[in-house]
Image (cartoon, rainbow, N blue to C red; front, side, top):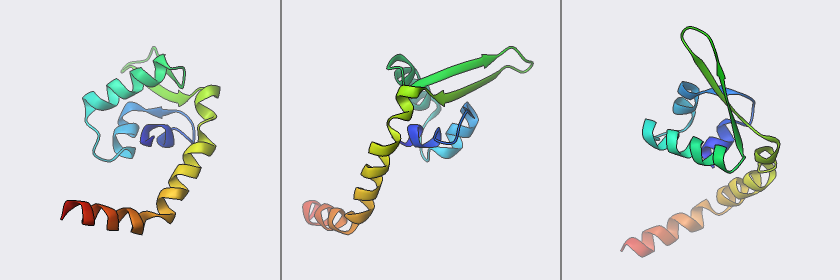
Length: 92
């Protein structure tokens, strides 16, 4: 979900995604992007420049995730206190 969110505003280079997705490793971001490409949610465009430039963006199918993702984020924000209390109770 964080990768999808990072691509909301248009094409982003790999390094931009690394900065936008807090705590993700290079390897995990690569695997996630490949999986999203395979599922048809993300498009990878490579430009024949020196140095090479690669950008990632949502496909029309990936763009349909905007509303469900926004709803999930809103739900999480609305219930954050309850979630945190549940975590504390579980961990004790």
